[in-house]
Image (tube, rainbow, N blue to C red; front, side, top):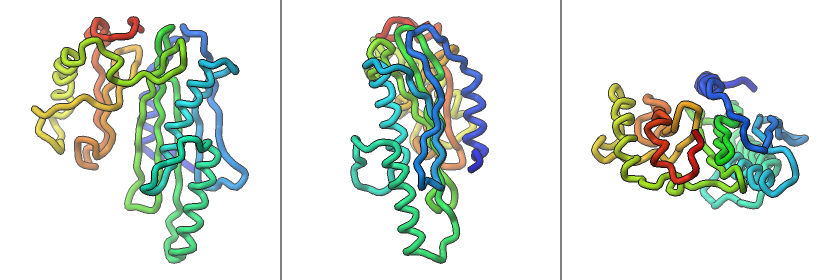
Length: 240
């Protein structure tokens, strides 16, 4: 299974964000699959060790990966493993192929993750998924995970800032520049913070996935706010 151009391009960009290996948690990249898997390729970070921090980190990663493989409108099973979700994805395709034998377009899913920032206080992980279940084009979805390096627990966006309103003011300035040549699905004055916030050595990455605020043709919209502009607004101990 080959990388799709957009997925490959974004992963190359992320590789430019080198991680700061200051915390005690170390990572390796693992491939997750099953014996009967023919459609899904997964390469994600795994926190090494059996301590509670590593278990919590891996659990959060698994949640995002499993959600990326979910098909249908029913609520996904939060307890299901990645392997179980791989099997379900393959089963869903086999059932589809039986019901619609005239369809020759194979389904596929590729999920890649990496640690894009690491400090004694915080670990930021990017997970990029590409899925295609037979539509006109596949769907690329990027998710950022911000984790407390001391516990492995996920940090919610609202817990990142000591003054979210002040941060919004700064963020909107950079947002306006990032959409100057794009059509958005809402008026710029109705600006809302991105749900995807990640950390890099350069600063905070604000990312809107395809269709989130703009038509498909606009693709993924993202911008970085320099670290020196947000450091004083962070509620966590400064990672920079």
